[in-house]
Image 1 (cartoon, rainbow over the protein chains, first blue to last red):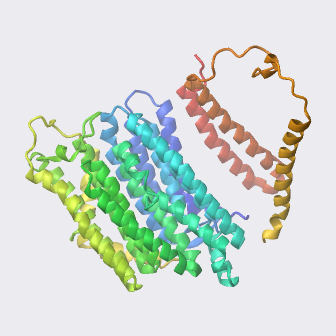
Image 2 (cartoon, each protein chain N blue to C red):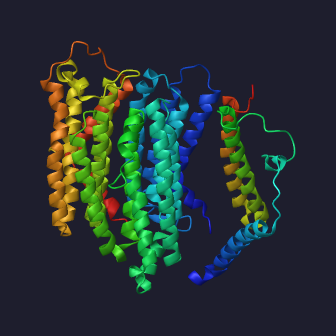
Length: 482
Length: 118
Protein backbone atom coordinates (compact mmCIF):
# COMPACT_ATOMS: atom_id res chain seq x y z
CA UNK A 1 0.00 0.00 0.00
CA UNK A 2 1.65 3.16 -1.13
CA UNK A 3 0.33 6.57 -0.29
CA UNK A 4 0.65 9.81 -2.16
CA UNK A 5 -0.26 13.12 -0.69
CA UNK A 6 -1.96 14.00 -3.99
CA UNK A 7 -4.51 11.26 -3.31
CA UNK A 8 -5.96 13.37 -0.50
CA UNK A 9 -7.36 15.65 -3.20
CA UNK A 10 -9.59 12.78 -4.34
CA UNK A 11 -11.32 12.59 -0.97
CA UNK A 12 -11.40 16.33 -0.29
CA UNK A 13 -15.24 16.41 -0.55
CA UNK A 14 -15.52 13.53 1.90
CA UNK A 15 -13.10 15.17 4.33
CA UNK A 16 -15.07 18.42 4.12
CA UNK A 17 -18.32 16.67 5.07
CA UNK A 18 -16.72 14.67 7.88
CA UNK A 19 -15.09 17.80 9.29
CA UNK A 20 -18.41 19.64 9.17
CA UNK A 21 -20.13 16.78 10.98
CA UNK A 22 -17.57 16.89 13.79
CA UNK A 23 -17.86 20.69 13.94
CA UNK A 24 -21.66 20.50 14.20
CA UNK A 25 -21.34 18.02 17.08
CA UNK A 26 -18.92 20.28 18.91
CA UNK A 27 -21.10 23.36 18.39
CA UNK A 28 -24.03 21.34 19.74
CA UNK A 29 -22.33 20.54 23.04
CA UNK A 30 -20.13 23.62 23.51
CA UNK A 31 -22.49 26.21 22.00
CA UNK A 32 -24.61 28.35 24.27
CA UNK A 33 -28.33 28.82 24.40
CA UNK A 34 -31.08 26.30 23.88
CA UNK A 35 -32.12 27.11 20.31
CA UNK A 36 -29.33 26.37 17.86
CA UNK A 37 -30.21 27.18 14.27
CA UNK A 38 -26.44 27.34 13.58
CA UNK A 39 -26.36 23.61 12.83
CA UNK A 40 -28.40 24.22 9.67
CA UNK A 41 -26.10 26.95 8.38
CA UNK A 42 -22.86 25.16 9.26
CA UNK A 43 -24.12 22.01 7.52
CA UNK A 44 -25.14 23.92 4.40
CA UNK A 45 -21.75 25.65 4.35
CA UNK A 46 -19.98 22.30 4.66
CA UNK A 47 -22.07 20.87 1.82
CA UNK A 48 -21.16 23.90 -0.29
CA UNK A 49 -17.45 23.35 0.37
CA UNK A 50 -17.82 19.67 -0.47
CA UNK A 51 -19.58 20.61 -3.73
CA UNK A 52 -16.75 22.97 -4.64
CA UNK A 53 -14.18 20.26 -3.83
CA UNK A 54 -16.12 17.79 -5.98
CA UNK A 55 -16.05 20.28 -8.84
CA UNK A 56 -12.29 20.63 -8.51
CA UNK A 57 -11.55 16.91 -8.30
CA UNK A 58 -13.88 15.73 -11.09
CA UNK A 59 -11.25 16.20 -13.79
CA UNK A 60 -8.70 14.04 -11.97
CA UNK A 61 -10.08 10.93 -13.61
CA UNK A 62 -7.87 8.47 -11.84
CA UNK A 63 -7.81 5.86 -9.12
CA UNK A 64 -6.28 6.66 -5.77
CA UNK A 65 -5.25 4.90 -2.57
CA UNK A 66 -3.93 1.80 -4.41
CA UNK A 67 -7.07 1.52 -6.55
CA UNK A 68 -9.48 1.76 -3.62
CA UNK A 69 -11.51 4.64 -4.98
CA UNK A 70 -11.92 6.66 -8.14
CA UNK A 71 -12.44 10.35 -8.66
CA UNK A 72 -14.03 10.45 -12.10
CA UNK A 73 -16.97 12.11 -13.76
CA UNK A 74 -19.27 9.33 -12.58
CA UNK A 75 -18.40 9.71 -8.90
CA UNK A 76 -18.55 13.51 -9.26
CA UNK A 77 -22.07 13.33 -10.71
CA UNK A 78 -23.19 10.95 -7.95
CA UNK A 79 -21.53 13.15 -5.31
CA UNK A 80 -23.48 16.11 -6.65
CA UNK A 81 -26.76 14.16 -6.42
CA UNK A 82 -25.94 13.18 -2.84
CA UNK A 83 -24.96 16.74 -1.91
CA UNK A 84 -28.18 18.08 -3.41
CA UNK A 85 -30.17 15.46 -1.50
CA UNK A 86 -28.38 16.42 1.73
CA UNK A 87 -28.83 20.17 1.25
CA UNK A 88 -32.54 19.81 0.43
CA UNK A 89 -33.07 17.46 3.39
CA UNK A 90 -31.44 19.91 5.79
CA UNK A 91 -33.52 22.79 4.41
CA UNK A 92 -36.70 20.71 4.67
CA UNK A 93 -35.87 19.62 8.23
CA UNK A 94 -35.27 23.06 9.70
CA UNK A 95 -38.86 24.03 10.56
CA UNK A 96 -39.97 20.43 10.97
CA UNK A 97 -37.44 19.74 13.74
CA UNK A 98 -38.32 22.99 15.50
CA UNK A 99 -42.02 22.21 15.37
CA UNK A 100 -41.50 18.68 16.69
CA UNK A 101 -39.20 20.00 19.49
CA UNK A 102 -36.26 17.92 18.27
CA UNK A 103 -33.93 20.67 17.13
CA UNK A 104 -30.68 18.91 17.90
CA UNK A 105 -27.32 19.23 16.15
CA UNK A 106 -26.94 15.45 16.21
CA UNK A 107 -29.54 15.25 13.46
CA UNK A 108 -27.38 17.32 11.12
CA UNK A 109 -24.22 15.49 12.15
CA UNK A 110 -25.83 12.13 11.37
CA UNK A 111 -27.07 13.39 7.99
CA UNK A 112 -23.56 14.61 7.14
CA UNK A 113 -21.88 11.37 8.30
CA UNK A 114 -24.35 9.34 6.31
CA UNK A 115 -23.65 11.51 3.24
CA UNK A 116 -19.93 10.86 3.70
CA UNK A 117 -20.64 7.14 3.53
CA UNK A 118 -22.84 7.64 0.47
CA UNK A 119 -20.13 9.56 -1.36
CA UNK A 120 -17.56 6.90 -0.57
CA UNK A 121 -20.00 4.31 -1.94
CA UNK A 122 -20.29 6.22 -5.19
CA UNK A 123 -16.53 6.44 -5.64
CA UNK A 124 -15.47 3.05 -4.27
CA UNK A 125 -13.68 0.76 -6.73
CA UNK A 126 -12.92 -1.81 -4.07
CA UNK A 127 -15.56 -4.12 -2.62
CA UNK A 128 -14.39 -3.73 0.97
CA UNK A 129 -14.28 0.06 0.82
CA UNK A 130 -17.76 -0.08 -0.69
CA UNK A 131 -18.91 -2.26 2.21
CA UNK A 132 -17.39 0.06 4.82
CA UNK A 133 -19.05 3.02 3.13
CA UNK A 134 -22.37 1.16 3.07
CA UNK A 135 -22.13 0.58 6.82
CA UNK A 136 -21.13 4.20 7.51
CA UNK A 137 -24.17 5.33 5.58
CA UNK A 138 -26.55 2.78 7.10
CA UNK A 139 -25.62 3.09 10.78
CA UNK A 140 -26.19 6.84 10.70
CA UNK A 141 -29.56 6.29 9.03
CA UNK A 142 -30.64 3.63 11.55
CA UNK A 143 -30.18 6.25 14.25
CA UNK A 144 -31.98 8.92 12.19
CA UNK A 145 -35.00 6.65 11.62
CA UNK A 146 -35.63 6.55 15.37
CA UNK A 147 -34.71 10.18 16.00
CA UNK A 148 -38.13 11.24 17.28
CA UNK A 149 -38.42 8.28 19.68
CA UNK A 150 -42.11 7.80 18.95
CA UNK A 151 -43.48 4.27 19.04
CA UNK A 152 -43.53 4.04 15.24
CA UNK A 153 -40.13 5.69 14.96
CA UNK A 154 -38.48 3.20 17.29
CA UNK A 155 -40.16 0.32 15.48
CA UNK A 156 -38.93 1.70 12.17
CA UNK A 157 -35.41 2.15 13.51
CA UNK A 158 -35.24 -1.33 15.01
CA UNK A 159 -36.71 -3.07 11.99
CA UNK A 160 -34.34 -1.30 9.65
CA UNK A 161 -31.37 -2.05 11.88
CA UNK A 162 -32.08 -5.78 12.23
CA UNK A 163 -32.87 -6.38 8.58
CA UNK A 164 -30.07 -4.08 7.46
CA UNK A 165 -27.53 -5.96 9.55
CA UNK A 166 -28.86 -9.19 8.08
CA UNK A 167 -28.51 -7.96 4.51
CA UNK A 168 -25.02 -6.61 5.21
CA UNK A 169 -24.03 -10.11 6.21
CA UNK A 170 -25.27 -11.42 2.85
CA UNK A 171 -23.29 -8.79 1.02
CA UNK A 172 -20.13 -9.51 3.02
CA UNK A 173 -20.46 -13.21 2.32
CA UNK A 174 -20.82 -12.41 -1.37
CA UNK A 175 -17.64 -10.32 -1.25
CA UNK A 176 -15.84 -13.20 0.48
CA UNK A 177 -16.93 -15.67 -2.20
CA UNK A 178 -15.87 -13.34 -5.00
CA UNK A 179 -12.52 -12.92 -3.28
CA UNK A 180 -12.29 -16.70 -3.01
CA UNK A 181 -12.98 -17.11 -6.73
CA UNK A 182 -10.87 -14.28 -8.12
CA UNK A 183 -8.29 -13.58 -5.42
CA UNK A 184 -8.96 -9.85 -5.37
CA UNK A 185 -11.56 -7.36 -4.18
CA UNK A 186 -10.51 -4.53 -6.51
CA UNK A 187 -13.17 -4.29 -9.21
CA UNK A 188 -10.79 -3.76 -12.16
CA UNK A 189 -8.73 -6.69 -10.87
CA UNK A 190 -11.87 -8.85 -10.70
CA UNK A 191 -12.70 -7.94 -14.30
CA UNK A 192 -9.17 -8.94 -15.41
CA UNK A 193 -9.41 -12.26 -13.59
CA UNK A 194 -12.67 -13.01 -15.37
CA UNK A 195 -11.09 -12.35 -18.77
CA UNK A 196 -7.86 -14.25 -18.01
CA UNK A 197 -9.10 -17.40 -16.31
CA UNK A 198 -11.23 -19.58 -18.56
CA UNK A 199 -14.29 -21.08 -16.87
CA UNK A 200 -14.32 -18.57 -14.03
CA UNK A 201 -17.48 -17.01 -15.46
CA UNK A 202 -19.33 -20.29 -14.86
CA UNK A 203 -17.71 -21.19 -11.53
CA UNK A 204 -20.34 -21.75 -8.85
CA UNK A 205 -18.32 -19.81 -6.30
CA UNK A 206 -18.10 -16.66 -8.41
CA UNK A 207 -21.77 -16.89 -9.40
CA UNK A 208 -22.99 -17.40 -5.83
CA UNK A 209 -20.85 -14.45 -4.80
CA UNK A 210 -22.51 -12.29 -7.42
CA UNK A 211 -25.94 -13.56 -6.34
CA UNK A 212 -25.27 -12.63 -2.71
CA UNK A 213 -24.06 -9.18 -3.77
CA UNK A 214 -27.33 -8.74 -5.65
CA UNK A 215 -29.23 -9.67 -2.47
CA UNK A 216 -27.33 -7.06 -0.48
CA UNK A 217 -27.91 -4.30 -3.03
CA UNK A 218 -31.53 -5.30 -3.63
CA UNK A 219 -32.15 -4.86 0.07
CA UNK A 220 -30.62 -1.39 0.17
CA UNK A 221 -32.52 -0.16 -2.89
CA UNK A 222 -35.72 -1.87 -1.64
CA UNK A 223 -36.22 -4.22 -4.59
CA UNK A 224 -38.64 -7.15 -4.58
CA UNK A 225 -38.45 -9.63 -2.76
CA UNK A 226 -36.23 -7.77 -0.28
CA UNK A 227 -38.56 -4.78 0.08
CA UNK A 228 -40.59 -6.00 3.11
CA UNK A 229 -39.04 -3.48 5.50
CA UNK A 230 -39.66 -0.43 3.31
CA UNK A 231 -43.29 0.55 4.04
CA UNK A 232 -42.99 0.28 7.83
CA UNK A 233 -39.59 1.95 8.00
CA UNK A 234 -40.55 4.79 5.67
CA UNK A 235 -43.86 5.39 7.44
CA UNK A 236 -42.44 5.30 10.96
CA UNK A 237 -39.36 7.44 10.39
CA UNK A 238 -39.52 11.25 10.61
CA UNK A 239 -40.81 12.50 7.24
CA UNK A 240 -37.62 14.40 6.42
CA UNK A 241 -35.56 11.27 7.13
CA UNK A 242 -37.90 9.25 4.90
CA UNK A 243 -37.18 11.69 2.07
CA UNK A 244 -33.45 11.37 2.75
CA UNK A 245 -33.60 7.56 2.83
CA UNK A 246 -35.70 7.25 -0.30
CA UNK A 247 -33.43 9.48 -2.38
CA UNK A 248 -29.94 9.45 -0.84
CA UNK A 249 -29.65 5.76 -0.01
CA UNK A 250 -31.12 4.88 -3.37
CA UNK A 251 -28.68 7.14 -5.22
CA UNK A 252 -25.65 5.78 -3.35
CA UNK A 253 -26.69 2.14 -3.59
CA UNK A 254 -27.50 2.36 -7.30
CA UNK A 255 -24.25 4.23 -7.97
CA UNK A 256 -22.22 1.44 -6.35
CA UNK A 257 -24.45 -1.29 -7.81
CA UNK A 258 -24.01 -0.01 -11.36
CA UNK A 259 -20.29 0.67 -11.07
CA UNK A 260 -19.48 -2.75 -9.64
CA UNK A 261 -21.62 -4.73 -12.08
CA UNK A 262 -20.64 -2.60 -15.07
CA UNK A 263 -16.90 -2.73 -14.38
CA UNK A 264 -16.30 -6.01 -12.58
CA UNK A 265 -18.82 -8.50 -13.96
CA UNK A 266 -19.38 -7.90 -17.69
CA UNK A 267 -18.17 -11.47 -18.34
CA UNK A 268 -21.09 -12.97 -16.44
CA UNK A 269 -23.70 -10.43 -17.54
CA UNK A 270 -25.95 -12.95 -19.37
CA UNK A 271 -26.49 -14.74 -16.04
CA UNK A 272 -27.08 -11.84 -13.67
CA UNK A 273 -28.97 -9.70 -16.14
CA UNK A 274 -31.62 -12.45 -16.32
CA UNK A 275 -31.95 -12.51 -12.54
CA UNK A 276 -32.10 -8.72 -12.38
CA UNK A 277 -34.64 -8.70 -15.23
CA UNK A 278 -37.03 -10.69 -13.07
CA UNK A 279 -36.24 -8.55 -10.05
CA UNK A 280 -36.88 -5.34 -11.99
CA UNK A 281 -40.24 -6.52 -13.35
CA UNK A 282 -41.39 -7.89 -9.99
CA UNK A 283 -40.23 -4.77 -8.12
CA UNK A 284 -42.05 -2.23 -10.27
CA UNK A 285 -45.20 -4.31 -10.60
CA UNK A 286 -45.39 -5.11 -6.90
CA UNK A 287 -44.57 -1.53 -5.85
CA UNK A 288 -47.19 0.00 -8.11
CA UNK A 289 -49.95 -2.47 -7.29
CA UNK A 290 -49.38 -2.19 -3.55
CA UNK A 291 -49.38 1.61 -3.84
CA UNK A 292 -52.81 1.46 -5.50
CA UNK A 293 -54.32 0.18 -2.27
CA UNK A 294 -52.77 2.73 0.11
CA UNK A 295 -54.80 5.47 1.71
CA UNK A 296 -51.85 6.89 3.65
CA UNK A 297 -49.80 9.24 1.50
CA UNK A 298 -46.52 8.51 3.27
CA UNK A 299 -47.04 4.77 2.85
CA UNK A 300 -48.10 5.29 -0.74
CA UNK A 301 -44.84 7.16 -1.38
CA UNK A 302 -42.94 4.27 0.24
CA UNK A 303 -44.45 1.78 -2.22
CA UNK A 304 -43.89 4.28 -5.02
CA UNK A 305 -40.21 4.37 -4.05
CA UNK A 306 -40.14 0.56 -4.46
CA UNK A 307 -41.63 0.99 -7.93
CA UNK A 308 -39.00 3.60 -8.79
CA UNK A 309 -36.30 1.17 -7.68
CA UNK A 310 -37.79 -1.18 -10.28
CA UNK A 311 -37.43 1.41 -13.06
CA UNK A 312 -33.87 2.11 -11.98
CA UNK A 313 -33.08 -1.61 -11.97
CA UNK A 314 -33.93 -1.59 -15.68
CA UNK A 315 -30.85 0.60 -16.07
CA UNK A 316 -28.66 -1.92 -14.22
CA UNK A 317 -30.06 -4.81 -16.28
CA UNK A 318 -29.26 -2.99 -19.50
CA UNK A 319 -25.77 -2.05 -18.24
CA UNK A 320 -24.72 0.13 -21.15
CA UNK A 321 -23.34 3.66 -21.07
CA UNK A 322 -26.71 4.93 -22.30
CA UNK A 323 -28.47 3.11 -19.46
CA UNK A 324 -26.02 4.63 -16.99
CA UNK A 325 -26.79 8.07 -18.35
CA UNK A 326 -30.50 7.42 -17.88
CA UNK A 327 -29.95 6.08 -14.37
CA UNK A 328 -27.91 9.12 -13.30
CA UNK A 329 -30.51 11.50 -14.74
CA UNK A 330 -33.32 9.54 -13.09
CA UNK A 331 -31.60 9.54 -9.69
CA UNK A 332 -31.13 13.31 -9.90
CA UNK A 333 -34.72 14.00 -10.91
CA UNK A 334 -36.03 11.51 -8.35
CA UNK A 335 -34.12 13.40 -5.66
CA UNK A 336 -35.89 16.64 -6.55
CA UNK A 337 -39.40 15.24 -7.01
CA UNK A 338 -39.37 12.96 -4.00
CA UNK A 339 -37.93 15.43 -1.50
CA UNK A 340 -40.31 18.04 -2.91
CA UNK A 341 -43.29 15.74 -2.37
CA UNK A 342 -42.20 14.92 1.18
CA UNK A 343 -41.70 18.65 1.87
CA UNK A 344 -45.38 19.18 0.97
CA UNK A 345 -46.34 16.27 3.24
CA UNK A 346 -44.37 17.86 6.10
CA UNK A 347 -46.02 21.27 5.58
CA UNK A 348 -49.52 19.77 5.80
CA UNK A 349 -48.72 17.97 9.06
CA UNK A 350 -48.97 19.10 12.67
CA UNK A 351 -46.85 18.42 15.70
CA UNK A 352 -47.69 14.90 16.87
CA UNK A 353 -50.19 14.42 14.02
CA UNK A 354 -48.61 13.86 10.64
CA UNK A 355 -52.02 14.01 8.88
CA UNK A 356 -50.85 11.81 6.04
CA UNK A 357 -54.23 10.22 5.31
CA UNK A 358 -55.71 10.99 1.90
CA UNK A 359 -58.73 12.58 3.60
CA UNK A 360 -56.42 15.17 5.15
CA UNK A 361 -55.61 16.31 1.60
CA UNK A 362 -59.24 17.01 0.72
CA UNK A 363 -59.73 20.58 -0.46
CA UNK A 364 -56.10 21.57 0.01
CA UNK A 365 -56.07 22.82 -3.58
CA UNK A 366 -58.20 25.88 -2.83
CA UNK A 367 -57.00 26.50 0.68
CA UNK A 368 -53.26 26.46 -0.21
CA UNK A 369 -53.05 26.85 -4.00
CA UNK A 370 -49.26 27.22 -4.22
CA UNK A 371 -48.54 24.13 -2.12
CA UNK A 372 -51.12 22.13 -4.05
CA UNK A 373 -49.61 23.28 -7.35
CA UNK A 374 -46.15 22.16 -6.21
CA UNK A 375 -47.42 18.78 -4.99
CA UNK A 376 -49.32 18.34 -8.26
CA UNK A 377 -46.12 18.97 -10.19
CA UNK A 378 -44.22 16.40 -8.10
CA UNK A 379 -46.98 13.83 -8.53
CA UNK A 380 -47.00 14.38 -12.32
CA UNK A 381 -43.24 13.96 -12.34
CA UNK A 382 -43.37 10.71 -10.36
CA UNK A 383 -46.01 9.39 -12.70
CA UNK A 384 -43.74 10.28 -15.62
CA UNK A 385 -45.99 12.76 -17.39
CA UNK A 386 -44.28 15.35 -19.64
CA UNK A 387 -43.00 18.03 -19.37
CA UNK A 388 -41.45 16.97 -16.08
CA UNK A 389 -38.10 15.50 -15.05
CA UNK A 390 -39.64 12.11 -14.26
CA UNK A 391 -40.74 11.70 -17.87
CA UNK A 392 -37.26 12.39 -19.28
CA UNK A 393 -35.66 10.01 -16.76
CA UNK A 394 -38.02 7.15 -17.64
CA UNK A 395 -37.64 7.94 -21.36
CA UNK A 396 -33.83 7.71 -21.18
CA UNK A 397 -33.85 4.43 -19.22
CA UNK A 398 -36.46 2.71 -21.40
CA UNK A 399 -34.76 3.99 -24.57
CA UNK A 400 -31.49 2.41 -23.41
CA UNK A 401 -33.32 -0.86 -22.64
CA UNK A 402 -34.81 -0.91 -26.16
CA UNK A 403 -31.36 -0.11 -27.58
CA UNK A 404 -30.07 -3.36 -26.08
CA UNK A 405 -33.16 -5.28 -27.21
CA UNK A 406 -34.86 -5.65 -23.84
CA UNK A 407 -38.20 -4.96 -25.53
CA UNK A 408 -40.42 -6.70 -22.99
CA UNK A 409 -38.73 -4.98 -20.11
CA UNK A 410 -39.43 -1.60 -21.67
CA UNK A 411 -43.04 -2.57 -22.46
CA UNK A 412 -43.68 -3.77 -18.90
CA UNK A 413 -42.02 -0.61 -17.57
CA UNK A 414 -44.25 1.65 -19.63
CA UNK A 415 -47.39 -0.31 -18.67
CA UNK A 416 -46.39 -0.06 -15.02
CA UNK A 417 -45.84 3.63 -15.40
CA UNK A 418 -49.34 3.97 -16.82
CA UNK A 419 -50.84 2.01 -13.93
CA UNK A 420 -49.04 4.23 -11.42
CA UNK A 421 -50.77 7.33 -12.79
CA UNK A 422 -53.92 6.24 -10.93
CA UNK A 423 -52.58 6.57 -7.39
CA UNK A 424 -50.52 9.69 -8.09
CA UNK A 425 -53.51 11.43 -9.63
CA UNK A 426 -55.72 10.34 -6.72
CA UNK A 427 -53.82 12.73 -4.46
CA UNK A 428 -54.51 15.53 -6.94
CA UNK A 429 -58.17 14.54 -7.16
CA UNK A 430 -58.48 14.74 -3.37
CA UNK A 431 -56.80 18.13 -3.32
CA UNK A 432 -58.96 19.75 -5.99
CA UNK A 433 -62.24 17.83 -6.17
CA UNK A 434 -63.10 17.17 -2.53
CA UNK A 435 -64.52 19.53 0.05
CA UNK A 436 -62.23 20.48 2.88
CA UNK A 437 -63.78 19.19 6.13
CA UNK A 438 -64.93 21.80 8.65
CA UNK A 439 -62.70 20.43 11.39
CA UNK A 440 -59.52 20.59 9.29
CA UNK A 441 -56.64 22.30 11.14
CA UNK A 442 -55.66 25.78 10.07
CA UNK A 443 -52.24 26.94 8.91
CA UNK A 444 -49.20 25.27 7.41
CA UNK A 445 -46.06 24.00 9.08
CA UNK A 446 -44.03 26.26 6.87
CA UNK A 447 -41.01 28.52 7.05
CA UNK A 448 -38.44 30.16 4.82
CA UNK A 449 -36.08 27.14 4.56
CA UNK A 450 -38.70 24.57 3.60
CA UNK A 451 -40.26 27.04 1.15
CA UNK A 452 -36.90 27.57 -0.53
CA UNK A 453 -36.38 23.79 -0.75
CA UNK A 454 -39.82 23.23 -2.29
CA UNK A 455 -39.44 26.07 -4.79
CA UNK A 456 -35.96 24.84 -5.79
CA UNK A 457 -37.23 21.28 -6.18
CA UNK A 458 -40.24 22.38 -8.23
CA UNK A 459 -38.09 24.59 -10.45
CA UNK A 460 -35.59 21.78 -10.96
CA UNK A 461 -38.33 19.29 -11.87
CA UNK A 462 -39.64 21.73 -14.49
CA UNK A 463 -36.23 22.74 -15.85
CA UNK A 464 -35.03 19.13 -16.08
CA UNK A 465 -38.27 18.31 -17.87
CA UNK A 466 -38.28 21.22 -20.31
CA UNK A 467 -34.58 21.60 -21.04
CA UNK A 468 -32.86 18.37 -20.06
CA UNK A 469 -30.07 18.70 -22.66
CA UNK A 470 -27.44 20.24 -20.43
CA UNK A 471 -27.80 17.73 -17.60
CA UNK A 472 -28.10 14.79 -20.00
CA UNK A 473 -24.83 15.84 -21.63
CA UNK A 474 -23.23 16.06 -18.18
CA UNK A 475 -24.45 12.56 -17.35
CA UNK A 476 -23.13 11.29 -20.70
CA UNK A 477 -19.76 12.88 -19.99
CA UNK A 478 -19.81 11.25 -16.55
CA UNK A 479 -20.47 7.84 -18.08
CA UNK A 480 -17.69 8.26 -20.63
CA UNK A 481 -15.07 8.35 -17.86
CA UNK A 482 -15.36 4.67 -16.97
CA UNK B 1 -5.39 -19.71 -4.62
CA UNK B 2 -7.75 -21.76 -2.45
CA UNK B 3 -4.89 -24.06 -1.38
CA UNK B 4 -3.49 -21.12 0.60
CA UNK B 5 -6.39 -21.47 2.99
CA UNK B 6 -5.84 -25.15 3.78
CA UNK B 7 -3.97 -24.28 7.04
CA UNK B 8 -6.96 -22.16 8.10
CA UNK B 9 -9.27 -25.09 7.43
CA UNK B 10 -7.02 -27.43 9.42
CA UNK B 11 -6.90 -24.97 12.30
CA UNK B 12 -10.68 -24.61 12.17
CA UNK B 13 -11.24 -28.38 12.25
CA UNK B 14 -8.67 -28.82 15.01
CA UNK B 15 -10.19 -26.08 17.16
CA UNK B 16 -13.70 -27.50 16.73
CA UNK B 17 -12.53 -31.06 17.47
CA UNK B 18 -10.59 -29.92 20.52
CA UNK B 19 -13.45 -27.89 22.00
CA UNK B 20 -16.09 -30.57 21.42
CA UNK B 21 -13.66 -33.34 22.46
CA UNK B 22 -12.88 -31.81 25.83
CA UNK B 23 -16.58 -31.32 26.59
CA UNK B 24 -17.35 -34.89 25.52
CA UNK B 25 -14.52 -36.49 27.52
CA UNK B 26 -15.32 -34.59 30.71
CA UNK B 27 -19.01 -35.45 30.46
CA UNK B 28 -18.16 -39.14 29.88
CA UNK B 29 -15.40 -39.54 32.47
CA UNK B 30 -16.25 -36.96 35.12
CA UNK B 31 -18.04 -38.14 38.31
CA UNK B 32 -21.51 -36.62 38.83
CA UNK B 33 -22.64 -36.12 42.43
CA UNK B 34 -24.85 -33.00 42.36
CA UNK B 35 -25.75 -31.12 45.55
CA UNK B 36 -27.75 -27.93 46.01
CA UNK B 37 -24.59 -25.88 46.55
CA UNK B 38 -22.95 -27.26 43.41
CA UNK B 39 -26.05 -26.43 41.32
CA UNK B 40 -26.05 -22.76 42.36
CA UNK B 41 -25.20 -20.18 39.70
CA UNK B 42 -22.03 -19.18 41.54
CA UNK B 43 -20.64 -21.96 43.66
CA UNK B 44 -18.43 -19.55 45.57
CA UNK B 45 -19.25 -16.04 46.75
CA UNK B 46 -22.52 -14.37 47.61
CA UNK B 47 -25.94 -15.74 46.79
CA UNK B 48 -27.44 -14.19 43.68
CA UNK B 49 -29.80 -11.46 44.90
CA UNK B 50 -32.90 -10.71 42.75
CA UNK B 51 -33.86 -12.11 39.37
CA UNK B 52 -31.66 -10.90 36.51
CA UNK B 53 -34.67 -10.36 34.25
CA UNK B 54 -35.51 -6.78 35.10
CA UNK B 55 -34.93 -3.49 33.34
CA UNK B 56 -31.39 -2.20 33.74
CA UNK B 57 -30.53 1.46 33.92
CA UNK B 58 -29.76 2.83 30.47
CA UNK B 59 -26.54 4.30 31.91
CA UNK B 60 -25.02 0.81 31.83
CA UNK B 61 -25.50 0.63 28.08
CA UNK B 62 -24.03 4.08 27.49
CA UNK B 63 -20.96 3.23 29.54
CA UNK B 64 -20.68 -0.14 27.81
CA UNK B 65 -20.78 1.47 24.36
CA UNK B 66 -18.25 4.14 25.31
CA UNK B 67 -16.03 1.45 26.79
CA UNK B 68 -16.27 -0.66 23.64
CA UNK B 69 -15.24 2.23 21.41
CA UNK B 70 -12.21 3.23 23.42
CA UNK B 71 -11.29 -0.40 23.99
CA UNK B 72 -11.19 -0.99 20.24
CA UNK B 73 -9.24 2.24 19.82
CA UNK B 74 -6.50 0.88 22.07
CA UNK B 75 -6.47 -2.43 20.17
CA UNK B 76 -5.89 -0.50 16.95
CA UNK B 77 -2.89 1.21 18.55
CA UNK B 78 -1.04 -2.09 19.06
CA UNK B 79 -0.42 -3.11 15.43
CA UNK B 80 0.38 0.51 14.67
CA UNK B 81 2.96 0.61 17.47
CA UNK B 82 4.56 -2.62 16.19
CA UNK B 83 4.82 -1.22 12.65
CA UNK B 84 5.58 2.34 13.78
CA UNK B 85 8.99 2.61 12.11
CA UNK B 86 8.00 1.21 8.73
CA UNK B 87 4.85 3.34 8.57
CA UNK B 88 6.87 6.48 9.20
CA UNK B 89 5.49 9.98 9.33
CA UNK B 90 2.41 9.08 7.28
CA UNK B 91 1.40 6.41 9.78
CA UNK B 92 1.94 8.83 12.64
CA UNK B 93 -0.25 11.54 11.14
CA UNK B 94 -2.86 8.99 10.12
CA UNK B 95 -3.05 7.77 13.71
CA UNK B 96 -3.30 11.32 15.01
CA UNK B 97 -6.29 11.89 12.72
CA UNK B 98 -7.89 8.68 14.02
CA UNK B 99 -7.29 9.69 17.63
CA UNK B 100 -8.54 13.21 16.95
CA UNK B 101 -11.87 11.90 15.60
CA UNK B 102 -12.28 9.73 18.68
CA UNK B 103 -11.27 12.66 20.88
CA UNK B 104 -14.14 14.69 19.40
CA UNK B 105 -16.43 11.79 20.31
CA UNK B 106 -14.96 11.77 23.81
CA UNK B 107 -15.55 15.49 24.26
CA UNK B 108 -19.09 14.98 23.00
CA UNK B 109 -20.04 12.22 25.44
CA UNK B 110 -18.33 14.07 28.28
CA UNK B 111 -20.32 17.26 27.72
CA UNK B 112 -23.50 15.22 27.23
CA UNK B 113 -22.99 13.75 30.69
CA UNK B 114 -22.62 10.10 29.72
CA UNK B 115 -19.71 9.72 32.15
CA UNK B 116 -21.67 11.03 35.15
CA UNK B 117 -23.17 8.36 37.36
CA UNK B 118 -25.59 10.31 39.56
